[in-house]
Image 1 (tube, rainbow, N blue to C red):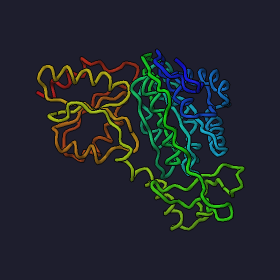
Image 2: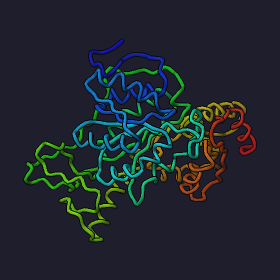
Image 3: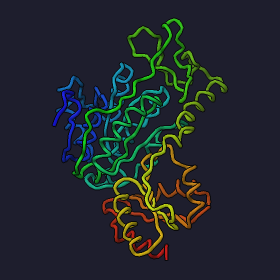
Image 4: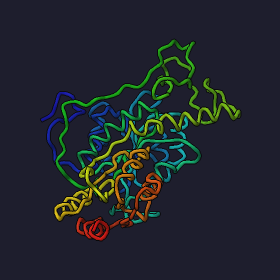
Length: 384
């Protein structure tokens, strides 16, 4: 079934994760996609190359990933919702543009379908090595939002959410998937309509507009569309509320604190998790993305054998749910962190739990996924 809105293909589909992501972008109102082909995200580009022009959008293949992101940022200032998609190699190339987007408070969506690394790695195999790269890859202090899907359905749903969050917080928002989620095929149910949050627009005439004066909750300035008659200096230098470059410490510090706090202060509001069996758990398995699918199955198996274990999947990775994990750590014996890297998520779990419980790591640095039986064996040793 398809609605009259050609952007939304309502009904049940058997979609690959990357295709579901592309359809989520269309449903969310994406009007421009710019990207450079890279496995395992190329199917997003291929699908949007076919679909976007049919609904009045624009597809552009950039000369590289940085070029692609810059076109996305330009489209955003032209009033369009825009997105790019890549893998870890491309995120490395984009980092200057990511910092620019954060500094200029440009809403955009960046999809990272992670593959094995470092360097070129293995293009067709999964890893979760970009956990810190998306958060801290560009220099200095800023904050971002990152959502981690674990299924094709969530590739659709969280892409829609990413566009809305980008507009609300005027920030880059990442959809951090991995090769397994991007390439698996499952049932995806598309609703008749989706919620689209409008951009905060100026409420004063151009002569009264102060470009970087922020108010409200979250504290972000209204964003005019270039060409509407408002003076809008899109400046990446430290600047005053009026967009004048400045070297004054107090002005710059106040601005950077706002860039940071507009997201970090809303960490609890932005927190999304999937929980199971936490009410009596002594040990909790923590994961995200595709490893969480195996973790959920292993926890159920362990409970069937009488072990008091629980399951926690992080959906919002950044801002990290510090307060939530700190409270949970005080009520359990320990956390078992399952991730496809040498240990990145586990460091944040250790920091957030602040020594209140034990933290153990089950690491697989890519290519081979976690198996439920392997996680169950770890739980047997820890929880007995």
